[in-house]
Length: 419
Ligand code: HAM
Image 1 (cartoon, rainbow, N blue to C red):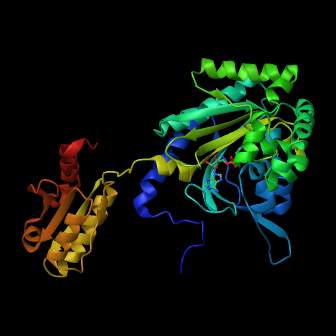
Image 2 (image 1 turned 180 degrees about the horizontal axis):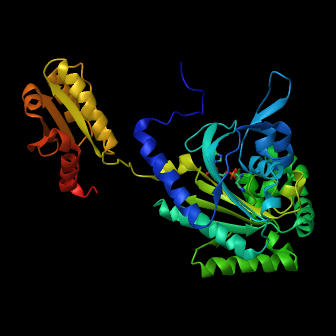
Image 3 (image 1 turned 180 degrees about the vertical axis):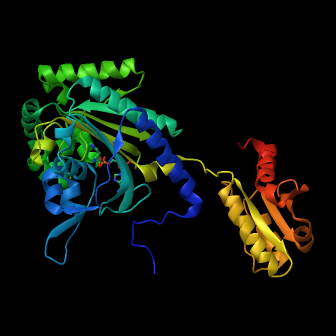
């Protein structure tokens, strides 16, 4: 039996990196006053149709949708935004506090063609910040994303930013774009010659060579922004400068989900190949009301955790603990069990495999990541002591039975700075 294509197991040897990413995320987001919200991975299909937009690749091609036993159409969440907003509306969170700063970490599902950095089950760190319209909220939110990338030791991260305007200035731009594309329809790829009618913005970020050549001469959204949107965009950029976050403007950055207004952005990192976006997001001022909630603005982003993991060096954590070995008959097993329990009570990791021969136990201890091993033999039992062996230096010493944990701690400290 094998895992489903595009869905990966995360094995113990990799889990240190995942913990590092998750712990760093919680630490940074806490500094900005964000709280965690966990929503189910299944939602009614309609939520995503309304929330993401029916003309997007995600909704058209990538959703895992099926009927449950009652015949209801349900979908494995392809992203977290719609689910988080559904939860906020359902629980009236904005009535309790009109400003909500929320994050979520968990698996998402998209039926895409799997390749390096693109999976069918993948994990996101997702942020939603609701109730603030001003540009400094955008600047600070983008800065938080950038700070997380920096805290994760990711090098060569660049931030690309654009403004998609509001519903009214974007409408004018879309009309201009559409009439520009009409003359070029013959050379557009199949998807884009359809999309130019349903969702012309998407043509701007098509990766096909011919489409890219066409859009190189397309009108730029920046020239169509209304005064309010232009002012907003300007202040976001000024805010980023004050926060010392480097950015590049990219007027072709449109993103694959339909809900964005004004600020949109992506973080990319080198070393990932073609799937080099580690995070993306933007403002979505009409979305909460589209989903049946109050007319409250919002902005958010999501990181793809697998892509971060690919960029991280291996992380092995030093074990703070002691391996226990017995040398003698079954009676010693009880002593070992008591010692294991005492060590754990003293907050030390402790393990043993007591059924094996002394030689086999010592071999396992030597191969383990434990820095210290405790040996109980007949002689030790008779004298009420335990032998402790430093597995890195082979230095041996003895400790009275009731002081073993203390002695292990002092050996760990000598080895290198445990406290
Ligand atoms: P997105 O750009 O679709 O945005 O996804 C965000 C990030 O998730 C991407 O930059 C990428 O790192 C990762 N990602 C997406 N698809 C895959 C995949 N198939 N395999 C591996 N990683 C993937 C959103 O999902 C928005 N909901 C973000 C947002 C939150 N906007 C506002 N709030």
